[in-house]
Image 1 (cartoon, rainbow, N blue to C red):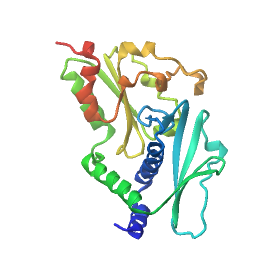
Image 2: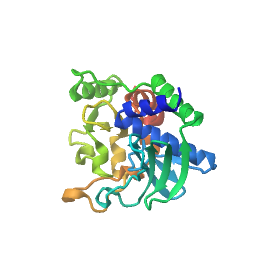
Image 3: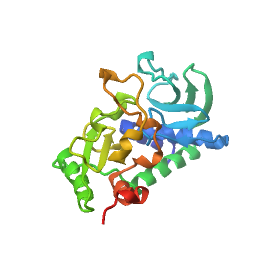
Image 4: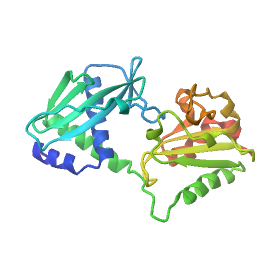
Length: 257
């Protein structure tokens, strides 16, 4: 694949995959400078990386059809408190990385390195493809599957979900709280889209652990909500497959004979 082929492929990518490639570029930048970081995008945070004490959200922009280079500017109203933004702009002649003040800190030509990073991302996607819901596979089907999994282990569970979780910042559904029915486990599936095709993260926990989670100081609608962003990573799962494979390993006391 040459540079022109790569640009054509970038134009064809959907926004989700294009954003992922921007994150790959930024991650390569960090690694090239031996900067230690943590990928936090699967922990329910409004960020992609933790670098030192900073939470970094990477924003990508396509400007492949214009000769003039452009910056990626985020409106103040769209910025989250406590988050720093780094921009990856794919211009016609080069890729530019800059901060919120338009200060450029790295550039890359469309060379073999970028092609290799793209190929690696593509291969990874094929190896671990996104499981898309069939049209008939509504939330009720998914909910029944999740609750059925725990029922087979003689455990009562309640599964809830939300579309486009990132629009809500760090606020999660009020019904995360265990119900009066007294289920043993609560499973919250957070989707990144409206079609239930892309799982952002899954937050699952023994119901009794709910009361250990810290509260959000000033929640909307003045309802008590838990700050799951500051809970142990053991409660987070990347997919339903990982949930089924790992839950009882992480919470062995939940299993019943």
